[in-house]
Image (cartoon, rainbow, N blue to C red; front, side, top):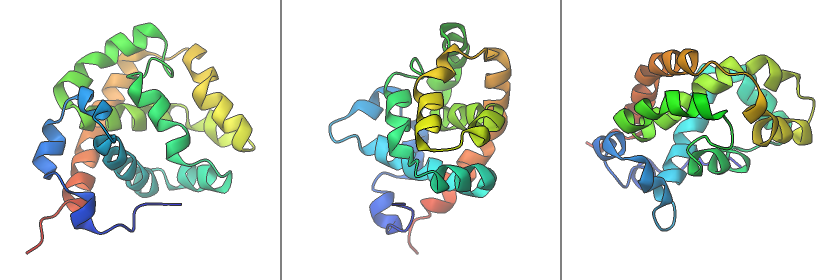
Length: 165
């Protein structure tokens, strides 16, 4: 079930500025409020910019909560080989949640062919939660791609969290 239909005020309990400045340990705060917001932003970003992948994931019954927490709480240690995690660390430190979202989107973009080839929920979750870590991933390319995603991430955060007038 998508949470995109939630009221903007409830979704954006913290200001967009606070979300943009949040650092990764906040993902582990009690109740995981930033995790919840990140999942909502991710859903919206994938629907807007990778719609065929979003449709495939949804069609297979794979929801973001079945894979994102595993990745984000381990700061990509469960998804990426160690050299790629080290390459991505700067963007996490510089951009906080924005960087986490951008790296996730970049990774899904780079692995899109494999993700689209997975025929069902089991195959998708096995790829995302187990196999992806052993795939050869160029950390430098991942970070370059993630930096290209940052403006789109910013746009979605801003349009989702427009203060009421």
